[in-house]
Length: 221
Image (cartoon, rainbow, N blue to C red; front, side):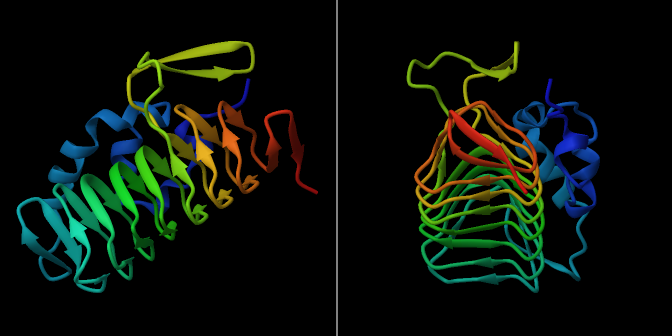
């Protein structure tokens, strides 16, 4: 069975949500409490480092926010992050340091570790993106099944019940998602793996893999 625990998927030194995430075994278990976590964490942030332009919104003074971006509460945006033209942060978003939230990108109920890039036309909802992960242009997370049943994780012969109606994708550290790919509800991509462009991904992609199609997943060389 593949190890899809938080400790196996993520380098926790690269997020200010580390103490929160350590409370859980699997990453999707953290989704329900992201909003409350951001509010409590935001209250501890130094006003010397973070602006507080509206209730429950904290933006690092060294972040760059384009004037046409929308930022909803609760939200934390880290140092040196760029939130570009037309970005739509709906709320419940913790965005780390040195990230890119690009044009027409929508974020909702997410944790983005440091150095994450969602640069062009991405939808990321009910998801956690690990350190240095990258969403190619037009790639999205689909966070609800078409039949509206609860999301389950198929881990080889085992089925893990998440109890969640909404769950997008869990991307480990240094994952690369190709352009215009769809990550179906409950997708897990383990660290250092690559997804071919135009892929429709579901289930678990092992670490250090290249996802070509559902039938062709090869180890990296």
